[in-house]
Image (cartoon, rainbow, N blue to C red; front, top):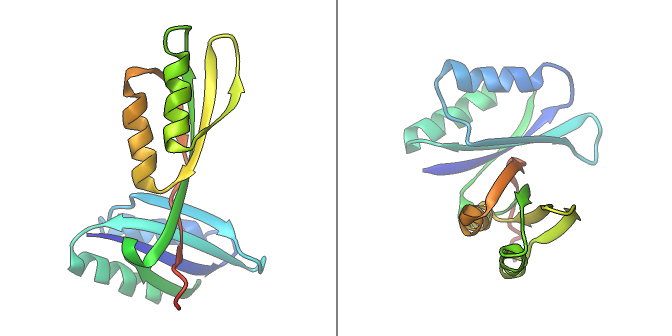
Length: 159
């Protein structure tokens, strides 16, 4: 079971270490972690994606709630959230596969953001599933380097 924990925390040094330590001590897995300031510079938003049993996910939430630096937690399923991830991919290209790379970009709505005579950097911002799909489509291409952000998520708007 995958859960997204949207955690508002006080923006000060050591908070990330405390949260990561909680996961480490209890052997909880972190699939992805992204942290950034909110509109209030004194508050940061941590988006933590974790996978485990229902009991484990409930335990994660309870332990996070015990941390003094934690202001508020929203526990979201993938269906309850709008989530995005950014990926940059550097690929080698030649005259034989250049068109294929451009077609893949068109299909997955990725952009070519830098080029040289034999390399390109591609950018995609989409759901984690579509990021994985792009990597699968590029599997026959010579990947040089891949950089991904963690998942960012917000609870869907309610009508």
